[in-house]
Length: 284
Image 1: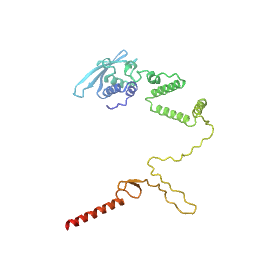
Image 2 (image 1 turned 45 degrees about the vertical axis):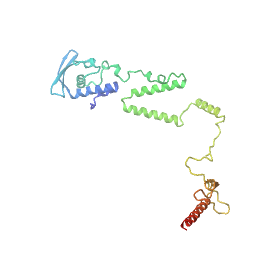
Image 3 (image 1 turned 60 degrees about the vertical axis):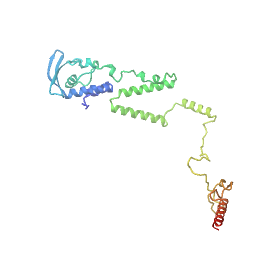
Image 4 (image 1 turned 90 degrees about the vertical axis):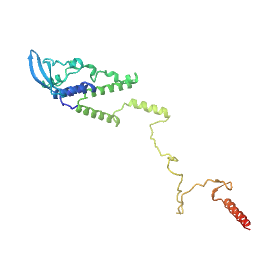
């Protein structure tokens, strides 16, 4: 649904919840686009308007009677939309537009459909997390309530919200970057830390990188030794190899394994000699 940019639509946005505002905006839009006044009569303090509504599905029109009291902007329509549903109809919004009425009168705003229908206390910290009687908890709740009230009051004022946000940022930077801090609370925190650690925090503390810590995936432990005094260079010191069991000679060795064991070669050569001698005997 397109917006009409009318002041009464902005007022409806401030009043109603999102779901109800969507329906009210439809009535405002159709009252501007599909409704027009064909006649008007004055009777004392009441002005009677005859409003035609175009039916977009056909070329037929329907006529509705709207009575407007000029003293208090009270209004009624023959369609009885407010009585049946609870918000004003498109015919009344058409009359309001002609009379430059920019706000919906309070008597036509149903409380249960407004943004502020729930009391602020429901959204307090005590309601969500339980009652906390500590002084700092009470102060925190008070701060949050003040900020919430300010944001609700400026919800439709973009400039006011921007100014309020800048003021909050300045206050935050002042507190976090060397601003005024309660010395008594600061001393209490220092005393608690000193009692926990068993040391004094008054002196200077020097921190050095610890030695011997290896990160995961940093490679093998290989260390290049320092250069000797005579100017020669030393290569990297490699750790000694761990002996492994040779399955052929059944010894723990580091120079060979079961694939290239000398005993295996001797056995292989002996078997070949036996095969050749037996083959020669068979030929004879």
